[in-house]
Length: 490
Image (cartoon, rainbow, N blue to C red; front, side, top):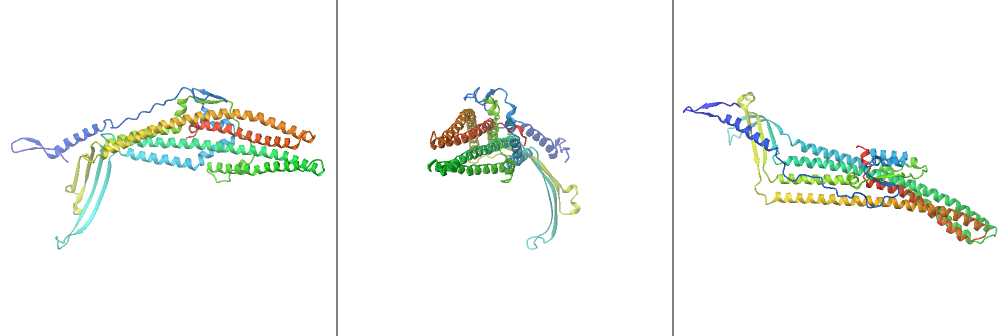
């Protein structure tokens, strides 16, 4: 394409059509590109304020203390229990859990979709080629055969004047971040589930130890009563009484063993292994992991911000806000730059001649003038989705505060219950010893021994459960505070 001047018969000088195309078209393109830098339509996302008090409503007790700086221990809270096996299980779960792997793949999908949206910043270039041999009908045409040869390139570039592409990219990026926070939420839930099941397993083991210990004492009592009955020293009633409390205790052991096996199977699945594979590693009886003396609580605002569900709700709101702009952009015209270039000929010999060249370039504008209000209704629908996302964000804040307050309360109160059970268990042991001594001395009847042994078994079982509950409530507290996901980069 050449630009040249031509002179008409009157001696006036003017531009040829080719010169006009070369001057006007680039000017139009330049104006459109400049316009594409304008602000995008639709609302700009602003991080909503996080209404939170300066301190927690529930009184700090049981070693809890509020700190302006969130303790780094919250990132790896399981290490505070000083149990290497628990730490190994949590690390294995992070590497092998299938739900976690699924969440990772969902992030890969979102990142790929974000990459697709970024590709809209660039023009699209297509190539075409055609070789065709054809013959017309002798009845309707000349009946001669001819060839057709075509090769060319087509280019199109949408100018993002009203920000539809930019808003789509913002929405796609927010979706990536949403799924990242969903992954973090899965991770902290997984860590908590592993810890809770591990604590439950150790609790079952401690309850079994208590039950078996009581079983041995009750078996000894039964044998003494049977021996004394055979010697004619006592009646038949104490024998049957000592036997039924013995068998009652024995009947509890299979239930505890069943719970122990189920918990071990659950732990295996959580770490991505087949049920039964962890039984050997977990068969050795170990004490319930102790809690640290002090637990640092962050101030409400910072604690809430580190929870993945709050962060995810905020990213969902950002995505829905960007999609409002995407919907609004359809109210405005769309501008494209299109171009084509190629070669066409009826014979191979002429295919590369200059006369075979064809080309075209220019802007294209499309604007829907009437659609019965569809676009405006689409904008209204998306605006409603944005409002829903805002409500869900506010609901997530309330739920988070409820979970944290409840976790603080449960952790502190269960420690009080445990302390009382420690005293009750000690008293029950003394009562059992005294009742058996007095019974053998003939000072009391056997019903006193029965009551003492029942109480001792009950209190020892409750104490084991309470010890496990205290540690489990601390796990739930760390989960409620959003601790754990910062420690592992997946």
